[in-house]
Image 1 (tube, rainbow, N blue to C red):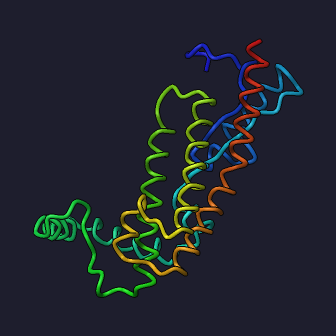
Image 2 (cartoon, rainbow, N blue to C red):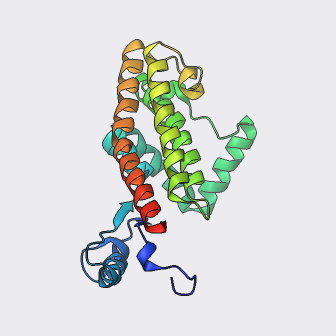
Amino acid sequence: MNTLGLKLDRLAGVTTDCCPSLTGKNFTLLKRVQDKVTEIDPDQKLVFLHCIIHQHVLCKSVLKINHVIDVVTKIVNFIRAQALNHRQFVSLLEEHETEHGDMCYHTADEDWMADFAFAVDVTALMNELNTKLQGKGLFVHEMHSLVKAFVRKMQFLSSQLESNNLTHMQTLKEVTPSADHLCRYSSMLGALHDLLAPFLSITYSMQSLYAHKRD
């Protein structure tokens, strides 16, 4: 921070990737940063954010599709574990001229395939948000705007699924999900919205705190 000319008395929060050396309770970077800030202002408590959109965690704990994520993860790890597996898989995709590669839909359970298609569409949206949030030089108000737009998109998609509208869920549309599927997926997106809503409150508070420090 000294090298970059950043002043601790203007620090409002820190975001990490959940690495143990950063987020543990004792002798970690975050603790050292908080201690330094406390030396300057004993009343100042930093806001720490950790992996707000960690996809694997969200898919398993919030979207409740770990039965899909676990299988896909094992398949990907197996393919990439050996060069021969990887080359054969790439050749298979080239033969079928697919963009990302289609698995054999007719060999899988229809419920599982519907969940898989839903996961593909949702994680694509998460990837888009992840990429934007990882951009260099982002200020907290910009991150707030990005997550707020994502939350609104989840609300919009949830309402579309309730109305049997799959315009923005193209992968899911291909497997023709049932009404029960759509109702469940709509609730899942609502849960994702509820999870991220507190983040917006935190970033809003950080904006206010930073504005106060700047003044």
